[in-house]
Image 1 (cartoon, rainbow, N blue to C red):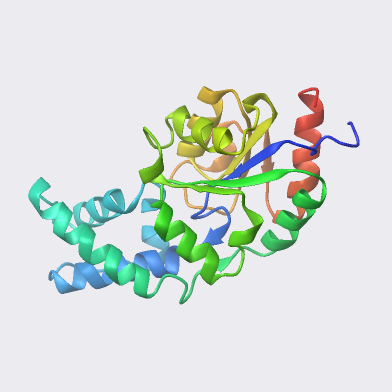
Image 2: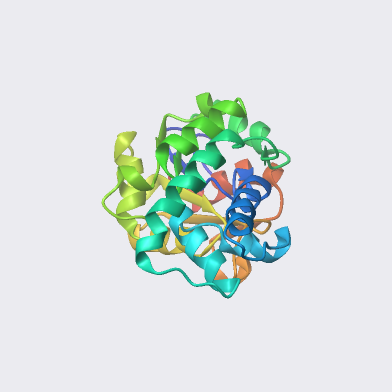
Length: 231
């Protein structure tokens, strides 16, 4: 493994379920919406896998799973209400995963360039990261409204890498779910998945290059994968 394996490499991170445990605030907001509409709310653990494809999907999935599927015309006003309330409580209970901040700092110290590649809206993503005090670790925050198509479409990841002037062949996508795996594989990037995120298919079954169980494993995993790719 080259000593400078991280130098100049792009490490692109998913946000919800990868960098930050956002489920308490996301599902809390969903449950407020459901309750206001006379629909049953969800226990947190039951609804965690609904996260990862954006707020519209979360709302539609939540109502459908609760037995009250939404007609198309009901989605926009409910989406607007969801976003307004979520922004009010965006970091009430959401926290970076243990070891996350230390891992980000170690990657940057090694010369890696960091960005966020998320199906969350860009403004919400920036607001969350700023509220948590970690937005300055990232050179770009690229959300669902900043790309031609969202993950698993590879253009989401390639747009994020291009924002940094990076090379996709020296990029690693760090995520938790099939959307991240699909984008990385289609774009030709390396893939590291965390085992603790939000996914209906266990991360180990998504065939990552490396699976990590804790953030303290991530810097060495990135070095190992970049070294194997000839960094």
